[in-house]
Length: 451
Image (cartoon, rainbow, N blue to C red):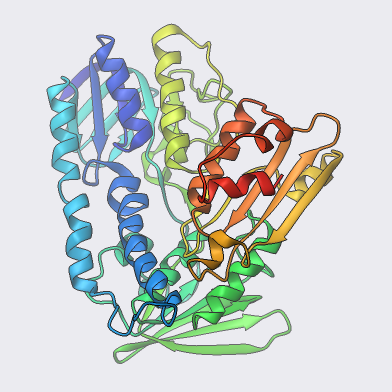
């Protein structure tokens, strides 16, 4: 059956929902499609449920750090099944609630895989949806590993659904997914191994602070192996065997109960039949211009992880791009996406965060700047809670005194980084920020000593 709409939105995450609601509230006839439960990755399979588990890991870690410092942590532990029930109290209501909101707004909902059959025509089951415009906001998925035995690998969304946590876990890849899940699993009592093919994990973060995090991760009992490429995964009875090779030809074998994919994500656009719509894409996603409009089909826009913008694949970015797309659809192309100061965070325990330029990038750009870098484990804010892993690195431009980059690890680094992002967005000189008065004693009050 053919059905006509002003706008068809593919996906139901942050970017997709933003576009759909804004265009519907402007009077457009809108359809939205998703083959998964409505709500998107962040709310169902990513940020939100992960942070619930991280919260439990933080409690356990804090208690253990304070053991012998006036606190007895002998019986502090994570009850995994109870924690997962608590996590589901957040995720289970999302699909029904999101669909209800869409329906109540007058948006037509379709369940199923969307596939283009024309420039602005999409097939969903037995229906053909025809739109004046189509927005692709399908998010991302784990990239193919292309290794023998890949079928035995557990993807990140499945890790968040485990009813029982295995005793031994191997994580493939040294990105944020592996480190975040590893820090949860360690606190829950698992033996953890991280295998990374590169020389340095968390490559987009400051190497000095990453080094601190790796040492802390190893101190907690995790094995972190660098320069190892996973070649084969075998299933032997009730366990898995992981074969990995190094650059000098040596092979290492790891026995484990679970292998988790933490080796990166790609735009989930492969099954959309973009060729039928004349929509060009690359490994980063749909190729778009500064208005988030397809370079090859002006009736198609893309936002969030599905768009090849070069911006970080983060939920706030998806919402930001969704607002831009909606504005350009409703008013014509007038709003461009910008490379704003966007905080990025690894929710390990403690968290690692960054905003702005890395030291390497700033030097490659030929900028003149000074570097403030210090290990702050001995500072009051870290020492009073027994946190041995904390530090910072600040890049401040000569002459202008503007903050080029801020890099943090330690207690509340996930919150404090937002202050630096705010200052950078407003182009506040570091000297002015340094003389602000913050509540004390707080982690934010440490900021003045970092500049």
